[in-house]
Amino acid sequence: MLPTLIPGRPVFTLGTFDLATMHYVLQEFLLPGDAVSYRAAGAQSNDGRWNVEVDKRSPFTTRLVVIRPEDRAKFNGTVVVEWLNVSAGTDVSPDWSYTHRELIRQGYAYVGVSAQKGGIDGGGIVGIPGLLPIKKADPQRYAQLNHPGDAFAYDIYTQAARAIRHPRLARLLGPLIPKHVLATGESQSAVFLTTYVDAIEPVAKAFDGFLIHSRFGTGAPLEGIYIPKAGASPVKGSEIPTNGLQIRTDLHKPVLIFISETDLMFPGGYLSARQPDNDHLRVWEVAGTAHGDTYVLGVSAVDSGSAPIEVLAKAYAPSNSVMGVALAQPMNSAPQHHYAMQAALAALNRWVVSGESPPHGQRLNVTQSAVPQLVLDENGNATGGIRSPWVDGPTARLSGLVTGLGQTPLGLPALLGVTEPFTAAALARLYPGGQPEYIDKFNTSLKSAIAAGFILPADEAEIKALAAFSFPAGP
Image (cartoon, rainbow, N blue to C red):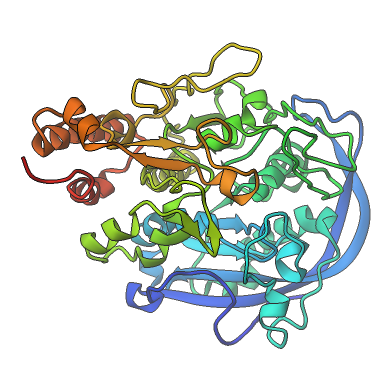
């Protein structure tokens, strides 16, 4: 069965900017088919070398959101396929939000896949007021959608990738002919992608590379029942390891894992699953970042690539309210999550296209104690990890921590980190020469991050302009 175009505008978070002015096309398709679920064939060990076999089969109809260059000459040949996140009980697209600037300026095509049932029919694990699953948000538009459950999500995602590649289905991308297909997903989607890499990709062979963004210490069960609980087993209904699940080392497909402070230190977090880089794996642990932040929840909506720098700077201002939820402290407002994610996407694509592997990232420093903690500097910022000018030339404490110096209570607030601006006295101590000294130190760190490959040269001018708004001018 072939995909069919759904006329009109999809229920999808894109921001306030107009894609047409960027010469990009937005379309939505129904994707029908028969999906299989899988069961384990042998032990599901921590090394990720799992074998699976087909379990059940069920019909499905899901939707694909396609964002592509209108001009074939502008297409770089790579399609980024996001496993849409459903933790809020609807489809959201955090990786589109974090990376859309790089996607558009380099001519990628993007496809968002409603892989999981929660985005279509509801049933999130993080309550956010006012968000509806897409079937309730527009019952008429999505009346044909039918999701048999998350055990089938892995194969639905595979079938989306195959539909993108298939010559007969080239109309998904209009005149564009894809050469490479990359998988990406954040948070719960990253947990499912971890299982996908370990168990499904060896048999599906659907993707050329994976950007796993903000995973935790385990993967999702093959049964698809993912129930994260702080301090407890984050999965239910499977023999999958509850912590310490690694990426299999025999896949031979490029995998880049992006880890924030929150992801590393969350109860049941990535700390238990750390593994060395190898020929097909890179892990970037980025200092000063939170699982979610001001960029993905606000700035990205106005970040068209041509927004005045004053507008961006105002949008980055620390806030203690998000989507109707009051926070005890302002959420993490550090821009480095966004800029490093763009560099991660570029690095993965280069790895797939040319074989040039991404740089190795230093790991965040963690104490060797009964209850591990991040090692902080005298300003309260994390040491180690991938560095940026926001932690090496700081004007605030920027944390992704869940407990101690993080938000309370657990739940959505705990994922958003904190921003604690320095006092005037602290700024004077750090930068006796005032704003010029701050700018000099900031720019030195920025050049180092760009040279190391963790920030893109294309973002340098904008970052420098933003820095001028981060320090009070005057004597």
